[in-house]
Length: 404
Ligand code: FE2
Image (cartoon, rainbow, N blue to C red; front, side, top):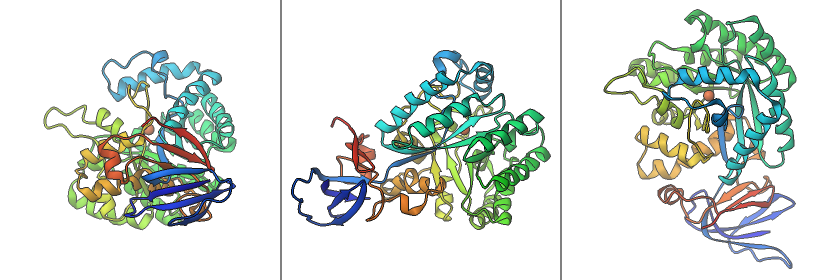
């Protein structure tokens, strides 16, 4: 297949891209179609690598009909509602809800997902999602995080479930240090989880400091651990919303440690703007980590949808552009170049966070032909017009075509 006249990652001029056997084999101006070659006219539209959602909970998505509504909209009611529902999970029902979520993602050009899976009560959801992951592997790549939602030091059973989940094939060790019983338990949990990840050669992604308490400072512990263990590039911290409330002097010191550690930060703006600030009157904090400043310091930030139509977040449509737009507004990242370049947060920074091998992701000759094409020629215009993808290409095949 030959794709004519597309602008690769905001390029000023159009290029042609040739695909053979599912791989990008040629990129140049004015390539001539071979005999019998299918030609797709890009018409000067933007071509981007696939979107990456670095943080979602496939086990909870689309459960809101079954769990009943979260009337207050708070995290605490969400946890209470979900904790009741998870006692009676059915593997087929988990898969069916996850398939609905994945369909949304595919329609929106997302091809890589990291999903946390609650293993605190039992391993039903993880077992179901490990099966689904294999079933859909050609279409969409999923990493699964063994997530001890209740904290690892609340019971021996959670620790047993966690280690069993890792043995079963979870890709990533999860955790939630700010939710452990005390600050000391939180710190211990980080060391415990890092050791578990090293033992089984897994990645690490903790729900870290997802609270408005400026004293919640587990991110520095995690970053120091990543630095000292040499797990550079394999450790992520999700949410880190307490950073919103840190003083600037502390943040300056923290950024140095973050940079040294090679840690990845994952922001979840849609969900955190909803769940954080709930103890404030006015002015109300907006519960978002410091995306702008982190990026300015060279610390990678990616994003996640976190929840879709579940007790923690009642809306959501799988569109990473919606997640991004919320984050850009909240973080005052509305300058032209900030907007135009922001696609990197939901594409290649996300791929780095997921530790995807560089030869498997991105737009250059010799890489798999995975990408999205838009009608507009720049990401700024795509965001401005709230444009959907025109074509989504996976392994050289056009999977989704959206009405223009
Ligand atoms: Fe989460």
